Amino acid sequence: MADDDVERLAARARLGEAEALEGALARLRPELVRFVELRLDPSLRRRLEPEDLVQETLLAVHRRLGEWRALPGYPLRVWVRLIAAQDLAQARRRHVGAEKRSVQREEAQRSASCADLGSVAERFAASQTSASEVAQRAELRARLEEALDSLDELDREILTLRQLEGLSNEHAALELGIEPAAASKRFVRALARLRPLLRGFEAPPLE
Image (tube, rainbow, N blue to C red; front, side, top):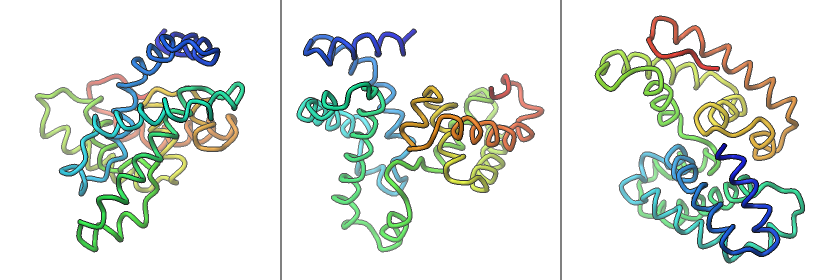
């Protein structure tokens, strides 16, 4: 399993093996790109490339590795994602001054770690329909966006972390700063809100 590979490599990296650290970060890179893509404000996409932001994050990880090593037992995956969220927030601050005031107001209301609603709805819709089902996907996306918007922010985040980004319940809870039992409860509640919308579409239901 990829998760097991990251954990094994992280354990060696904590002991100072540079090659193990590089291996772990290489496996985490696609996940970090998805992380940024889901959280990059649409108004700033023409200015900020997810791959460039991820590269900045990986450089920061090397500079700040001592911070992680000073946190015994803290998962490398979660710590790297936190660095990515910080870098994304900094990038927004650098670029938002060049945007319109409407974007500044929107930015003031959103956390760097909060996934963009439209991006999340699009990813869910894409996972449930084929590329040829354009009209069906558009309909599902609109319905999902409305449903996601009605969810509590933490419910929406736990759903995104687990269903779209593949984090374990424990890692998702740690990233959000809540207990695993609470994270699991929120995940089940969020799925219960979305499942009725997926009836009639061909892809397997959310699990």
